[in-house]
Amino acid sequence: MDVDKLKAILAALEDTDVTQLTWVSGTERISLRLGHPPAPAPAMAHVPISQPAQASAQGHSAAQGGPAQTPAAASAAAAAAAKVERDKKTFTVTSPFVGTFYRAASPEAPPLVDLGTVVKKGQVLCIVEAMKLMNEIEADQAGRCVEVLAQNASPVEYGEALFRFEPV
Image 1 (cartoon, helix red, strand yellow):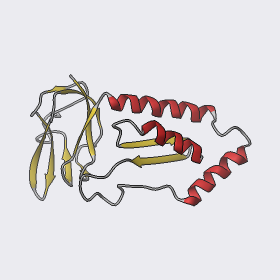
Image 2 (cartoon, one colour):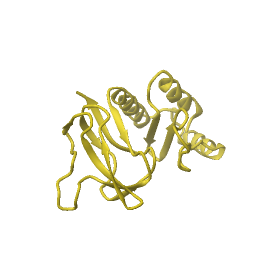
Image 3 (cartoon, helix red, strand yellow):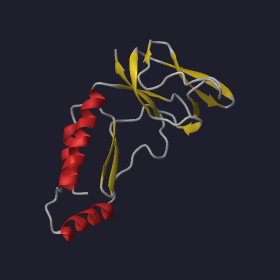
Image 4 (tube, one colour):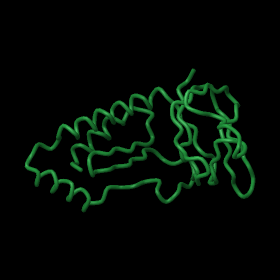
């Protein structure tokens, strides 16, 4: 990845409430987490870009002989900017602890929250099983579900995003 592109992304995020960004452009992938984690974070909390990765990305751009920003990179940058704008208008519900994420109260039951579901403050969104205890995760505020970010019956980490909502 070009260092100037990285600086431009960081500058664009500087005055926003965005705390995490994943950007993919062709074979390049970058994950940024800004700010300090609320508590001891998992090992993947901060992924710095190493010098060899920067050098290989610069060598890749130079080997192509084209401009530093291809049309695909420009569309990826536009998509990243659109994601940043969307993230400003939404809020994320995260896992309060490590455990197993369940979308429903039982395997036969329908999901507690699905895309488009409008929830009230205090409504149960999902269950996270931790140490054989089923913990109900409740909504901190009212909203409409626009994205389910965790897979049913999958392990989740502390602070991992589970749902994205738009306020209602």
